[in-house]
Length: 289
Image 1: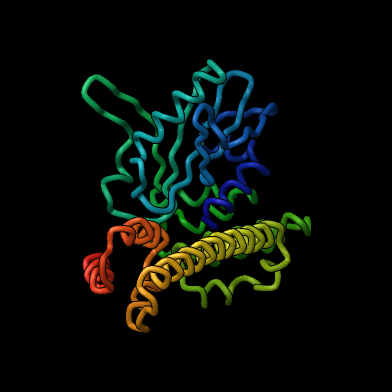
Image 2: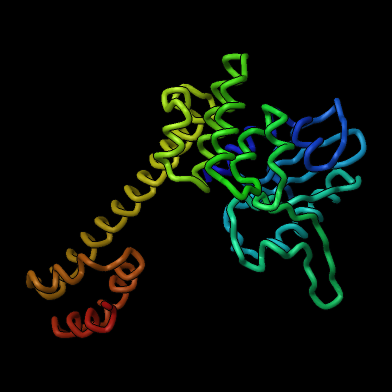
């Protein structure tokens, strides 16, 4: 989700620039809304919601065309939630970042029997790069725009980034540009044109690293809990079998140790009907792949 995070960062820090690009509007009052839509919360890292005085703007940045549920259905769900909550006009835009020939990137509506819902689709590889090169806040998107000479375009983007005078803006725009460029260009070329140490100092890069670290910790905790439950279930089953049949062979113990938590729970109930140790071997043979 790193690419989605970059787009969200740009949208939330330079909303007026993206509104001008995506909607052709000049607005000064913009509120960035939370990306949770009740009821039955829908969370979408790639979803950006902004509120102007007269409408809600929803931007969905997509790296890959495939999604579950399908993108048209998701857009309808978002629209219904937003309409219920804010009861105002809603304009939805899906921005496909990475080039693809998939028909999903060329679909802009849901058609299901008596239901129809439309939204706008922008494919970055069809966009004119000049509109991005002229605006420092949009420079990262220029790396994905149309060009008959992509490497030359990347050189132009690098030169434009280098002209940003404000240090913090330079650091963060440079980092976003390098990261989005990774969707299209070889990393060696990116490294040649952009200073790598600048990206590592940027706010957005640090946020991505921190998020990845947090996700890693959460995943580790989940795995740890699952492993703990598996060990506990294994221990209980072995104790039950030992009481029922005496010692259990190493081969059977190894087979039981490979079982999932759910299978261990199932075995714990099934062994109440076992009459011999052979029943254990038969049960394992039928439950192991």
